[in-house]
Length: 159
Image 1: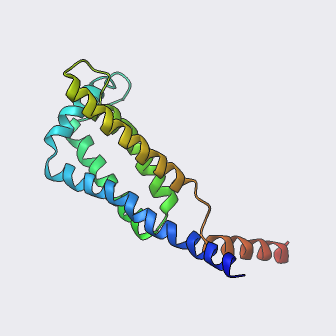
Image 2 (image 1 turned 30 degrees about the vertical axis):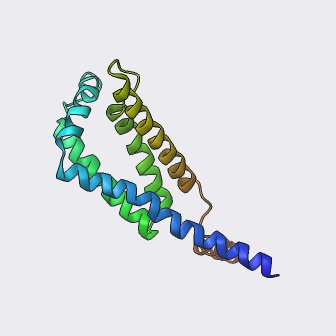
C-alpha cells in the first residue's frame, strides 16, 4: 500500500516541478528578446523574406519578433503556474520550431566553431521541444478527470 502512495505522490510532484523548469526557458528567452531584439530581428528577416509571396500582407520582422516574445512570456507563465499547461506547451512547441531554424542554422557554411555552437544550440532546442511535447500530451489532472466523470454522470441522468 505504501508503494502505491509513493508512486502517486511522485506522479503529482514531478509535473509540478517540471512544468516551471521547462517554462523558465521560454520566459527568460522572451524577456531577453524584448530587452535586446536586434539579433532576433536579424535572424528572422531572411526567414520572413521567404514568406512574402505566401502571406497576404508583408510582416515586419520587428513586429514578428516582439509578438513571438510576448507569446513566449505569456505561454511560459501559463505553463509555469499550471493554467492550461497542455495548451501552453503546444503554443511554446509551435513557437520554438521557426525560431530554432532561424537562429541556429548549423548547416550553413561558416567557421567550424560557429557551426558547432549552432548545432549544440539546435540540439538543445530539440531536447526542449521533446519536453514540451511530453507536457502537451501529458494526461489531464485529477481535477479534469473528476470533471469528466461528473459530466458523464449528469449526461446519464439527463438522458
